[in-house]
Image (cartoon, rainbow, N blue to C red; front, side, top):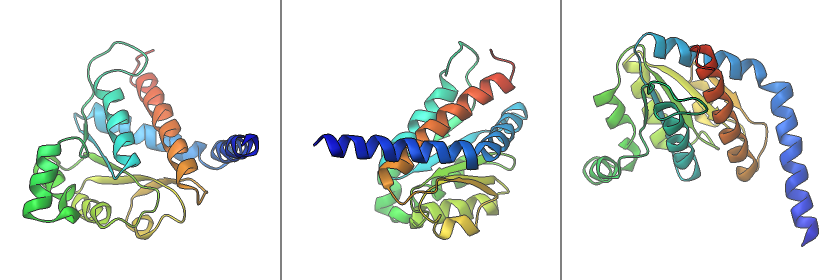
Length: 190
């Protein structure tokens, strides 16, 4: 049992170290893009499935609520949050459309979509990225494993070099918190 604990912690530490080495520039450029979108009265849209849905809600809430400092709310919406919209769309149009249909109605040119996905293979993620492209919405993602089909469609992405869903998700929420901190500092909230 102790070996299981040690193995998880070591793997977590190894993947975390790789983020510092491999992803710092991408994290900074993503934060700058978010800052620019917010400064131009745009909206940050987030989405994901399962644990990534929870992460999309969590990070969105940090922006619209607050991360470290009391401040004005920032325009941030998780497309994974509205269960009535999700179940209506899934029932009437299919599960593959739950995010794209919402983005079609809410998004506008100059906004940004940030998909959170461990595999990059979910059809609803592919569809929302394609919808964003038709509306001239910037497309970013937090990815894992090999990046899947999504990696070829995105304007930019942060890729976690791990095949462990647990480690990828742990890094995604860590990066989400870093992005929130960078956005608050970049907007002059410190």
